[in-house]
Length: 593
Image (cartoon, rainbow, N blue to C red; front, top):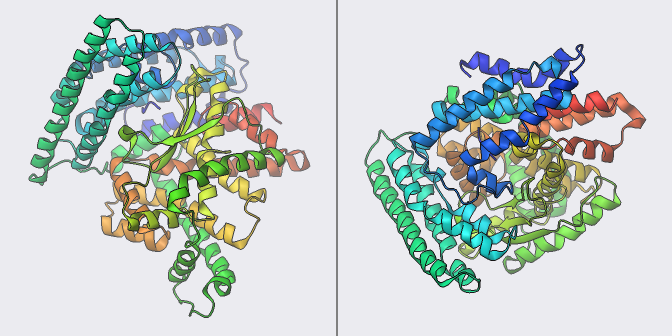
């Protein structure tokens, strides 16, 4: 959601406080007055001041009172944001943690991390200077046009007012961008070209079918033309800039480097540990998974490979077996249909095996990924925010229409008969889709809005293993081999991201790691290399969150013995919103003993 002090050592102490603050303050009884005052100050009052500075984020979570605003992302806005952040941090720190109960104390820690992170992004990381893809108006306009939060005419009038600010928005972007990376410049070109679709025939059709006045329609025409002109100018400007960067060997590298990476990791993951520590654990987990796959490959080799000689190299052996098994996949023409069919099957399994309660009133809708969101991932959940929990939840799937036959085959083999269901588990049921529905129910708006990416991705990865443990997939060696390959991807994400951004891993070595040691297709590996250039730290969130959740569950199982209830654990765990796992662990251990 929102991304985002001082010396690194102090930063790590701040992160550690998120983990240990509740325990250290436990002896002092919380003050009712302090809790009430905190809830009033950092509830609706805080967000009413916060959203005018972040109207795009407000729209994303279903808060539409500032939807007609589109501030220019310039120095004036950044100064206002810094003043706001400093004032709010001062007020936040005026509350003593020992005077707050567990729920408010963890809200305080989570909000402090968020505000510090936002400040660091402006003054430290300064990605507003070097990431041209961060400037794109399409997503918020599309949400306003496609979300039925109000009558069409009201939404169109909001869009009409917002449209007036688009030229100034892109003018500010061009003014502030300095020494960008080529990779983010090219993504900015690609996604802003796709963004033009938002202001094309579909919008014109909505206007024509509305009850807007003749004058409003005329003004719409003028402002759409001006907005499109500004976007096209931005794209053309970026193309010129990209040409200059191609001739300049001093262009900024997309690699963050150790110091920036560790700081970003501490803010984004919030585990209390370091990126390097997680990287070392991921390398050990990678070896454990490969060893398990080696044994499963020996078991399955005669069934699928007949009399073919078994390679001595374990990576070659596992890779050849997976390659043969991957011939079993959905046909290209029925890929989306296969995905749609799995949704009710997964819902039935989760319900019958009493894994977690589902909400039939919030159906999941599969749709083609909008053009302005394409270019990074093949699929993902787009869920409503806590202010508009009744809005539709979409499962975006990028179409394969533009892929060559070779690329399609590579993709479908990667998401083969055994892996495609695991992928849908991760993205939908009981993964992201279910977790985000529970998050929107959280009584804490802070926890729901400033969601922790490691918890969100970690739950999705955890849900894959949990489903196989429940017997989904038939508990066959084939299912466990392919699951291990899929789980290896989450682990390798951490190894890859740290190796690339901190250790300087080359493209050649990255592709070798992904294809030979993680058994990914060339198509998947190429896409992952693109992704690691365009993002940082996010790829570590999968393994970071998963390992914390799994470790916590196993600890509770050991402590509670026969009293441990898996469904109760899942529902209570998700009830605290998208909080860092360590904070959830504190809350659950305080309530569920």
